[in-house]
Image (cartoon, rainbow, N blue to C red):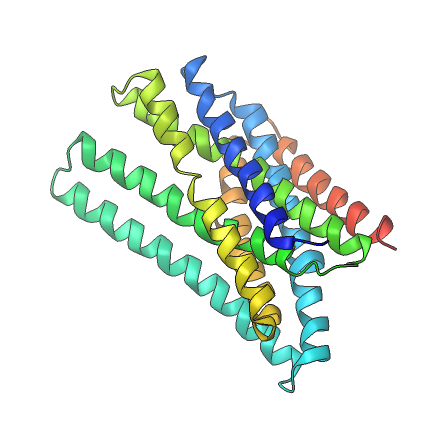
Length: 264
């Protein structure tokens, strides 16, 4: 891949575009179809869990063995934990802001700002993860590495669809117009291209950071999938047993197929 930074930009523009598609739901519906939304969230979780290993952690370990004197297990573990802690800390900061706003009887504008901020904060490491995955694709990268980066971008794009809707629909219910709700909803994904380019540039210019950065992105992805996507997609499992679970299994299987079967 001749210009991985450009490819990272293109991939994150797609993930932003899918956020806009999700936000576009507000132009036609007052609420999203929960059954299919849960299937999409489950599918994205399955893809992201699988991608965290095959597209991020496994290459991180290999790169650490090739380029660093530090033990590969230490680099991968430290990066993974730092990625998870970073996303946890950002989530805690947003929750604290929400709690303070609730205590103070936060007005409609405050609730809107905090909602958008929470989604936007989570989009930063997701965009960076895509950027790092594409930044690792030097010229002549093997097919499985390319497939892994593309599939990781696909998984993040899929989970961005309900995130776009999760911003736009509540804004509409709070009294914003449809088009304004759509504009703010899609804007929550604008940070992903910037984060993707920064992530790609860092690992291409400072190659020693690549193993740690890949593991960092994996930790962030696992936290998003396990803490947010899986619980969210299982909320109405009594009405639709195993529907979201089928999405998780299907997403994991697709990632495994692309990364292992096609790559091998």
